[in-house]
Length: 338
Image (cartoon, rainbow, N blue to C red; front, top):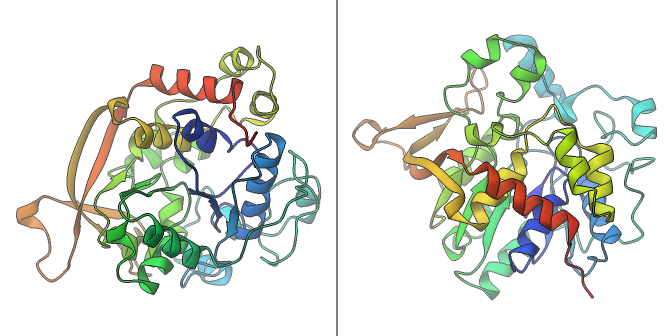
């Protein structure tokens, strides 16, 4: 599993454990924040629930090509992102109070985390090598989930030509299609949730991963914008008090969709999918394009002949009841290492 971790991100691995899956490890990546802070969030969220037997590996500090300076130049050319993630300006005051680290130095440890600073440490700084090792140990059995940028998976693909084919599949929170018009209406939050920041944070890595030989690739993007955790739902979950229901109640951003939880639900139980399609997908890797990092979809007869594009699954809609029931149960009755 892979995500740009925040204080309420435990739902994803808790849902997987609730379904009886083995979570071999978590990888912290750079997207919403630096890989180090992503990894510290993962360690802290595992620790509060006695789940530190699950290892955490820190991923790459930077995307393959993009740096904060490059991203600033791109936004000056093509317009600012409504959400800049790690590429936002450094805010020392906010970070000292527990907010996500942005700008600054990727190797510096944050002063605080809302869920508490972890007592444990990462298992290593070589996430791509670790992922390669796992698929060779369990060929055909491992499913990867990505809730953030695809940098670390791209590095694994480039390091080992067998890596992608040895997996069981890949589920990605990202890959929005035809959402530009939605970015012109409403407030910045409306524009934000339709930006596809996970892909735009590292377009080159996205292209590498979406053209790799994974047995199947599923994009959960437009569908992941459908459902939100409102205050009533969070209070209902907190009727059974656990560290995770408390964190969800106190820190969930109710104005943002349950992106990662919806994607996890699709991965765990395909019956949660109500409508889906498949198409060949390309990624815009031209720096001077306004859609740099976004996908472009093709039917078979119209796909480019000089590119080796992959057919991917694209989820349109999911079962809201299944999601809310599973997430609440996972938060209320979390599995632990004991």
